[in-house]
Amino acid sequence: MVFEMDELNSIKLTYDRDYSLRYDVISQDPTMNHAQYFSHVTTLFEKNLWGTGDVLDIGCGTGLLKEMLLGNFQFTGVDLSKDMLKIAASRGYRVYEGAVQESLYEFKENQFDFVFAMSLLYHINDVSEIIERFRAIARKAVIFTLEDIPECFEKATWETHQFHIYNHFSLSFDNAHLDMTLGGWQSPSRKENYVPRMRLVCLTAE
Ligand SMILES: C[S@@+](CC[C@H](N)C(=O)[O-])C[C@H]1O[C@@H](n2cnc3c(N)ncnc32)[C@H](O)[C@@H]1O
Image 1 (cartoon, rainbow, N blue to C red):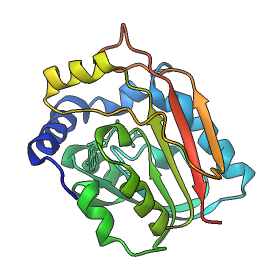
Image 2: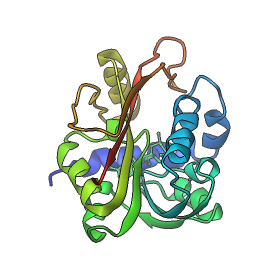
Image 3: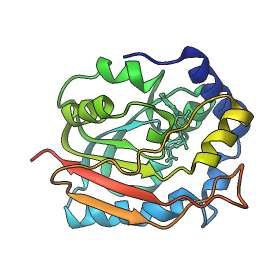
Image 4: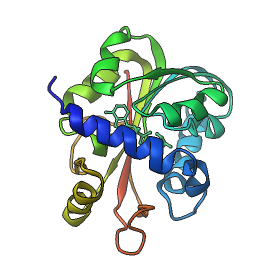
């Protein structure tokens, strides 16, 4: 799989330097993306009686998922940003530093019960193969978000941070277990103008 090393370095630097220390505080803002999906993920797990298992959290950031999933779960996280990962590790995550484009192939098929990728896929250009790989690794379910990124936001991100972001909002999935559109979330860096919608998708093994 081809990916741009310079851009990965820019993403890593941005999260290390600009976000890691304030990420958990920003995430408590009710206009942010976490507030949009956390309660739906909790309900999804309650409805399916998913209360235990091994979780692989791709682009785990500071490991906020662990605050949300109640039950007996073990968390493994992959992320580019070592400073985000330090916080995830302090929450009890087992952590792997690296790009999802490579790390995913280090995990075995059916190794985890659940694979999550929350607010991650807009960082990746070609996601089809990556989602297929999520499905191979997950025994029970794959849960991810797709953000409806406007073109002007893509342009501004490139100019400010020197990495691209991508809109995968219109991808379709056969037989999704859950596929819902959520209200907008606000970017912490471009708060005033941009309120993209997002989708929360869950694909199950059966
Ligand atoms: C918006 S944050 C989301 C963090 C977490 N999933 C959450 O919901 O709080 C995106 C995270 O993805 C990571 N990331 C971006 N591109 C990545 C890549 N190609 N491989 C691994 N991690 C990546 C960033 O370092 C960052 O921590």
